[in-house]
Length: 101
Image 1: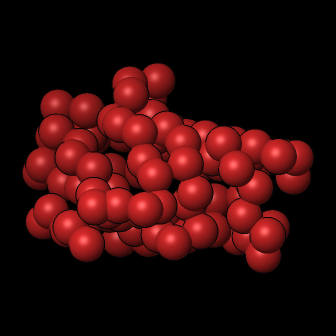
Image 2: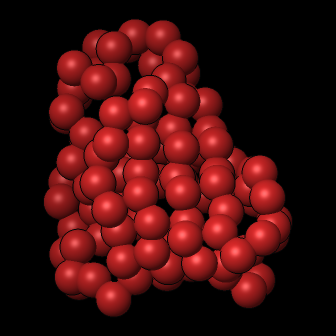
């Protein structure tokens, strides 16, 4: 599943917001970081999923199914460092298994 997110600001740090709509019963899942996410924090409905850093080794972050109840969910990604060519739409990818570098 992919969700498009638009950056809220273009300063040194950037806050990305996306809305996820869940219609079925959700399972445990992971949110996948990409190389353009430098260093920051991921939140789902104001619940901290974890901190990320592009040097790895972790590239996916666990989201337990109770956080993904049916309905609308807000995903916020706070990137502490500006990514040079990242002002267009970003992609947030949800996967169903853990991924390491």
